[in-house]
Image 1 (tube, rainbow, N blue to C red):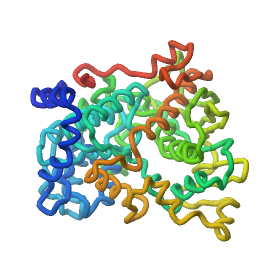
Image 2 (image 1 turned 90 degrees about the vertical axis):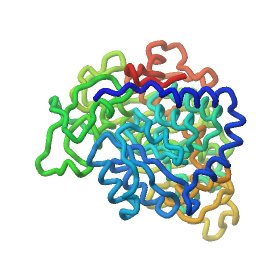
Image 3 (image 1 turned 30 degrees about the vertical axis):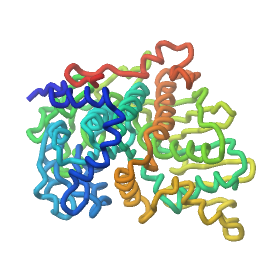
Length: 462
């Protein structure tokens, strides 16, 4: 069944009120949350996107919220989430195909968005306008223009938004590395290199009948009309997360209509850490240019793949961004996954597994100040570590009405660089960036990729 995604009259009136009186709305949010919280004072959460990411990451929020609603366009995902998340404690949660049903639930305090990337900005904007705080998986955007819209609506509504770049809550690894940069242990950072891996090829994937368990029209949402493609694998269970080669579910990041590939997937994590370290070291994170080399599994013409029946995001790349103070940030598909920070006084490497380098060894004799980690973490509580602490940080900030550790502004600085790197790679030419105007200098063809056209009925309103 085709659904029209024009806002309902109820939501339109709510959006109009928000625009007319943003200050009043922001000041009322804390009492709204208190009034609608469940009887045990845990916020009521609505999950939009119950695939592998949404399902698995919810376990870190156990005990901090009540799951009251689940939306997914895949019947298997939706039912699996309701029956298994929180060890079955969410069996009374309501199930929906249309996320707007969750936004219309007065009892829902917060929304967790774990859909494919092409849906993030639209659902996030509508959730904020519906008066919900939001935890949204990265990247928030598919284009740089979407980031502008998100910033505008957050300012209008005063909602709290946590981005799922949870490496910012790895206290003994990434936070410690950034704290070391802030304490001058590396001197002036001259280069940051992030290794994030590349994509893969698939060969042609034929059109396939849409499975009965999938609402393909709603999965596509704002993306262009496209046939469902799938090479079924009889060894795989469609009730599981992996269903084979397809333009849906777990391989959506191999298609530019839905994602920016590895560049905006792992790039959202590691580029964020590198730019955080630059800022903490008192340096600039303002990009002035980006360029490099990339390879794709299909030919490109005028910035677009010549074939769209197979995977086509970059398989390998080495892109270099230059900041306005001369520091470089290199994004590589090759090398050991992680972030290498090189400075005039030393260098360190940090990943999800370790933190190494002579400045790290020197901490044994000259430890960081006792409050270094706390200051780097914005002075926010750290009752846990890693993923669980990221969720705790979000709920703490919704109660206190303060900015979380993975805020919209810092995330957009990092993901916008990833988008620029992708645009440069797609045209195979360097780009000069005007950070004030938020446009590519002297390249109208490239600037056209700063935004995208939404499918009729799925536009972002306002």
